[in-house]
Image 1 (cartoon, helix red, strand yellow):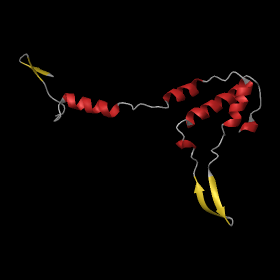
Image 2 (image 1 turned 30 degrees about the horizontal axis):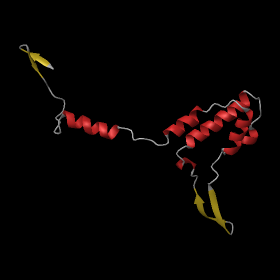
Image 3 (image 1 turned 90 degrees about the vertical axis):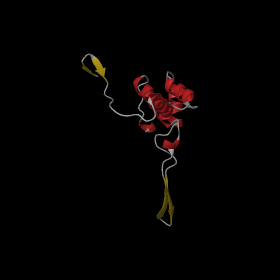
Image 4 (image 1 turned 45 degrees about the vertical axis):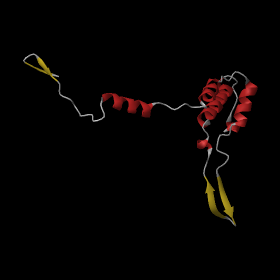
Length: 119
């Protein structure tokens, strides 16, 4: 805004053919997060505290360190196909890996156990 003879002069930085209200409305529609049905389950998994040795052992054994689905399909000693790891397609992958990590940390920090057999 510039002042000349005590009258304000407004210099627009860009022209908006849709109008200010339509632009902000369309932007809000695009940037609004969609409802995530798995969010309560994600939150519950993230909030699990490991406070029991048996539970920590169970979690460390049940959640694999590596994706068990990755495979090379071989015929007569030659690889004919490769199945990539599909764990990243699991929408709860990060929560399960975090839960396994917390279980292993509990076993090391609180129980003083060697966890090399779980890795």
